[in-house]
Length: 59
Image (tube, rainbow, N blue to C red):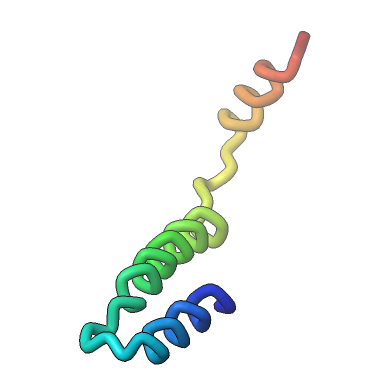
């Protein structure tokens, strides 16, 4: 949020006609949405996945 705000301030100070901060802001938003998808829509935990993980962790 702070970085995005700084980019908008830089844009305002330079007086550029094109609102160029939208590109990094949108890129950041895509990354944030992908991370939220991974966190809030995880694969369901099944008994098979538990057994696979237990087998992987055994010496």
